[in-house]
Picture (cartoon, rainbow, N blue to C red):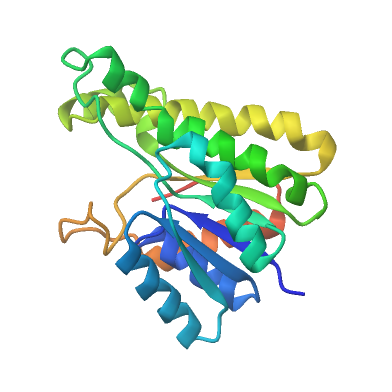
Length: 229
């Protein structure tokens, strides 16, 4: 019976590369995002390569809907062996102008919904010693004055807060889940990726390189955070 990877926040770039890499290794692939057309196209592209894939349209920004989503994936493709969280949000670009509601919302998608997905997937993950939670993160979350200056200049202060919180959560969950043998790790991407919305035409980081980095993280399980530029 094949393993299943759940790719949350599917789109061009990293998540497509991860779906292809794990699919090529025999995984069934569940794709989740809001854009139904993009999901359908992604599932067809994987199927054309002989990879079993299914699309699950959903708004991952609603943490309360995540458990039901995982139930649908489980019913369609079986036990979830790998959870890949590639979803990210925005908002509160200028913390001095953002209202409290906007600031709280910054943490819904990358923190609350990720945690809801982890909690919902744990019954499956605990059954498989090769299970994993894999998280995409960004370098704006690092504690460094130069990074802070970039976040302010780019109007991405809310994203920087979310990335920092996500980085801390990966570390906390790694310690919490260690006794149970459930692995969690993140790849911190330090530059823009070719073919994504952030690519202005000068990006040099290939999506497949990030996909390989996630595969290395999954197979080696030596560290809980790594980076790529």
